[in-house]
Amino acid sequence: MSPAFTDAIRNSPFGTLSKRAIWDHYDGRVHDRDHMVAAFERHTENVRREIPAERLLIHHVEQGWEPLCAFLDVPVPSAAFPRVNSRDETKKIISLIMEGDPCDAGGAVEGIFRGPS
Image (cartoon, rainbow, N blue to C red):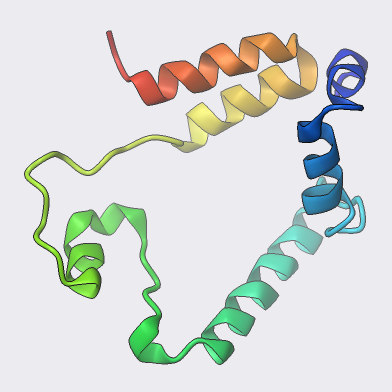
């Protein structure tokens, strides 16, 4: 992370949350792809093992509303399934956080949720 970003969040609730939920949880190895993939796979297997199949939906967002709504036993909305947090959008936000002014990242996030003008 950029020193400016680290300094900006150090004593904030977000800084505390980030440290506890991400850095500490993953032994500070968030840039180690193999470590992170293995952690994700372990977590996924733990969830599959612990949650009864009838209560668990493994949903892939590219499937859209149908499997999610069927699982929840609710009608499928007429609105299009939201398509945010693409790989490119996520990389842009991370880049702004890691290298730039943290305030720029907030604008990028807001733009994603607001959608095209």
